Length: 321
Image (tube, rainbow, N blue to C red; front, side, top):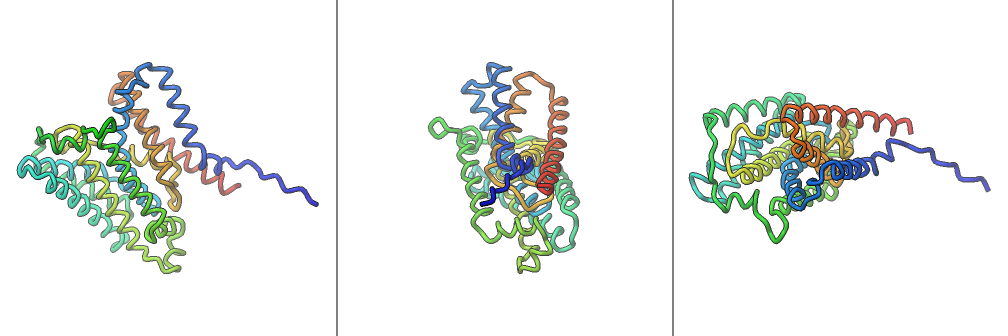
């Protein structure tokens, strides 16, 4: 009987399965050794609260990237939806209406980008860049750059509250992650996203409504930006139209570091969670080390570049394997 052929080591397959977990464990150990405050209970809770906004944005970005697209306007939609929500809360004192205003705003901006992507075949980075400019221009015109503070206990509970020892925003994040996982793993439109990102022409030939899938991904990204906006403004107890600049870069880095290919067609929610945690602990560690905001931007910018390079190397390694 012939011996079974020994399978060659494939870096791409190995990294896809275990790489992000090894990176997270290594960083966690290094940061804990370098700064003794890193493992304190208060700091761990801070990390979990801070990572919520990135993770919610990453859920929307993941849908876009799996489809072979990208959302460059997420942080401005976040600021617009969150600030309008804060304004509504101050003027009406109606929590339900304030949340509804934010989600409707995110839905509208997502639909705006999705419409131009699907109806006019505009490249997603152009359509979402235009969305970013429209959202920023609108909220700055509406508010005149003014912040809206003291939003009330009911609203701030969303970003600051606890249920037992667990921060409420973390519970909210888990619920949204489960919804995102369900859509990607168990629904036709989720499977359609992988098909569209893998090969759009083949997906169309197999009967998938490519335009509907892309439109849904853009709308979901808008909704996730709005949800992140509510949490961030509630955490700060202030609606700030200039908040969260470049947060979409953190979210994109989290998604790509988690193994979702920029070329589309691959990615899992579990790995994206780990990617978000990596971004969160890096930001937290730099704050603990008193690294300046400008240097933090430099580090995170290089991190985005590194994530894309890793994605390219992994895809090439898979192809060769």
